Image 1 (spheres, rainbow, N blue to C red):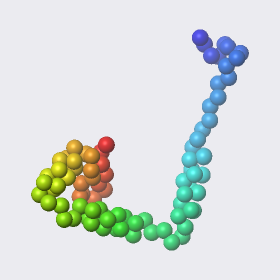
Image 2 (image 1 turned 60 degrees about the vertical axis):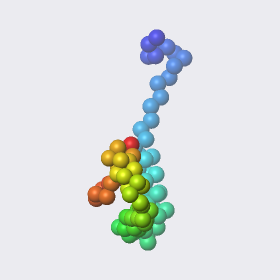
Image 3 (image 1 turned 135 degrees about the vertical axis):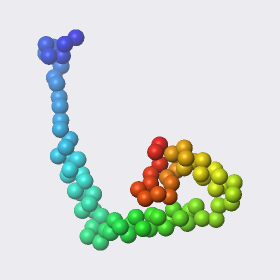
Image 4 (image 1 turned 180 degrees about the vertical axis):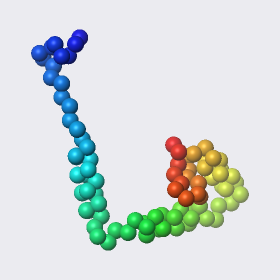
Length: 83
C-alpha cells in the first residue's frame, strides 16, 4: 500500500540532531568545571592494571585468549574490546 495516497497515514519525521547536541551539552555541564578527562583516563588505567595484577599462569592464559578474541581490551593505547 502506498502511504502517500492513504489519507489515514501521516508521514512523521523528526531530526534528532539538535536534541542530541543539547543532550551532550547537558552531560558536559553536569560533569562540572572540575571534570578532568585526562585524570579520569589515568585512574581508569590504574584500575585496569590493579584488576589484572597478580594473575596466575592459567588466568594470564585465559586473559590473553579473551584479549585475542576481542572480548577484553588489550594494553595498547586506545584499547577497547571489539565486541
